[in-house]
Amino acid sequence: MKHLIALSTLLFALNAAAACPSIKPTEMPTIPDGSAANEQTMLDARVAVQAYLGNIDAILRCHDLQLTNRSYNELVDREMAVADAYNSELRRYQGRDGILAKN
Image 1 (cartoon, rainbow, N blue to C red):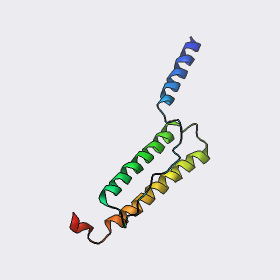
Image 2: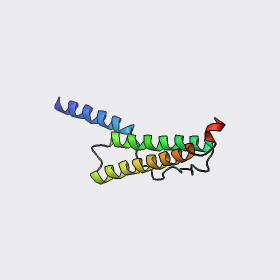
Image 3: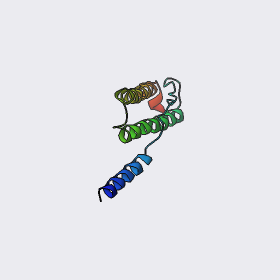
Image 4: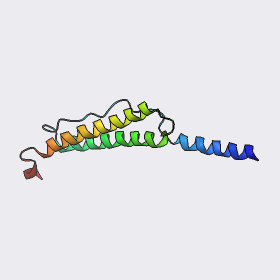
């Protein structure tokens, strides 16, 4: 009986891990220059950044117990660097002269 419980627990854990991304994202999305980008470029960048951050979040949630502290911190640092870079360029884009007149 104990073997059946252990086997079903193992199969459940393997099934849960199967939904997790298997590799870390290696390439950060390209962040456009906010002082020169157009609206569509900034929207495309937002979608790419959100997908990248979502992938990292999925890895952090799924592999929380399997990641070393160094790997975990590296992923969090990547996440913050990309978000900060995009937000900085978004502020530059929004702060351009004449952008409000266009809207």
